[in-house]
Length: 398
Image 1 (spheres, rainbow, N blue to C red):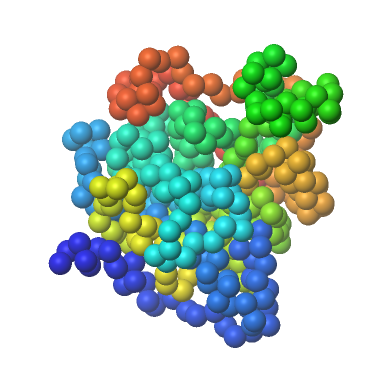
Image 2: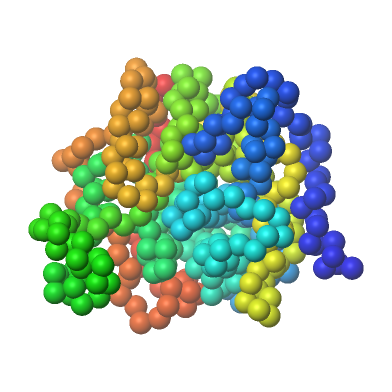
């Protein structure tokens, strides 16, 4: 009986006071870079929202660290929001932003593999176990609440062990995104001509030979760009509202991490001055792979009406996310930022070409030299000292 209830418990909400159907109005809704006309495309809008992977509190998973908590209820909401943002990046990387999920329909194998990255087991690269234990290196005890910046730093470090997705994760510092540093991190050296010829298909070799030396440009490592910000002191400064909303319109948008003190949400879009978000504060039972190696995904998609909150009720501590699969996507993002964000007198963040001279030299993050897997490596918190602690981001002047 319990297994039946757990399968459908995301249909049951304890937040009914906060749920409200979308109004039947002639307004635009923006969801992660895509727009929907509310009056005529409501079903398409709801389908787009339910397609996002939804990670919530879980219970009855193996104790974190062997003797720690077996549920993240009450403390893991920001970690779950970080998982949702990263999962959206992986969906865009492997399936594309236009991919859509349909209930009880067979999904691509890449989808199942993405889902398995986030299962609540210590051997899954972005599990609650891995995130909580990597947080120890950020000064957070297991079971302690994370802020947006801490989650960003944890994802950056865990991504070093994830060879399949091979993401470059850049977390901005001091409200500044440095183009030169990102290019240095994402532009990887190409294979030598001889090596490439041996490993590439014949059709690709022929194509490369026709293009000549210009084909040997550096390859681009898909970029997850996270910009932690503080948009006020105790509450969000209204001067940032328009720029904040503009970020959800960008094709590269992965939404934002934020919410209220000790109460995190994953913001995916907006309607007027209301932010649309996925809420991780529902406790569901741990789900593992089945005998055939797949995951029953019914509890990983929110089938309720999405929740909304007035943007001015947002806590000022947030983290914006963007995904740039190719270098041209990043170049396009830079142009949009210069046009829409940097035009403001009080800028939400800065975008600069060169690495600031007063900063320490930029060194692209690299996987620590260890002989174990990532999961085994961070299973021992003593070895987390190899990672340097990151400083908190600064408060923007207001």
